[in-house]
Image (cartoon, rainbow, N blue to C red; front, side, top):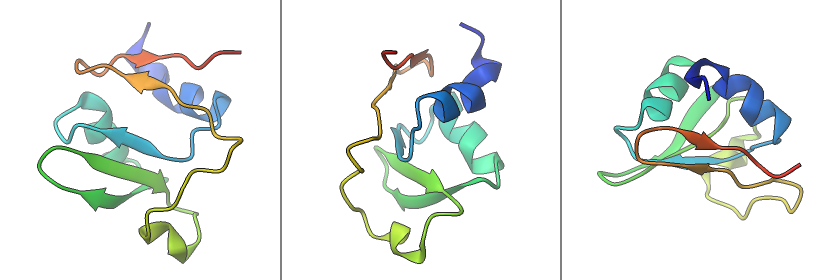
Length: 83
């Protein structure tokens, strides 16, 4: 899978929260994208939410049930959500 299509995949799967290793290529891409913001970070993980999320997005909350989960492997490869 081409790594450049991560925006389309996140939109297609309606991903509202991304949890990755801070050193993952996806973390680097999300940091550079103004549409995403860091809401939590430590040495082992970073959590991103869309920038247009309400101000309460800075508080970690359960994801809405309509969100789907995709896995990001340690090399940054995204496992697609089920259809």
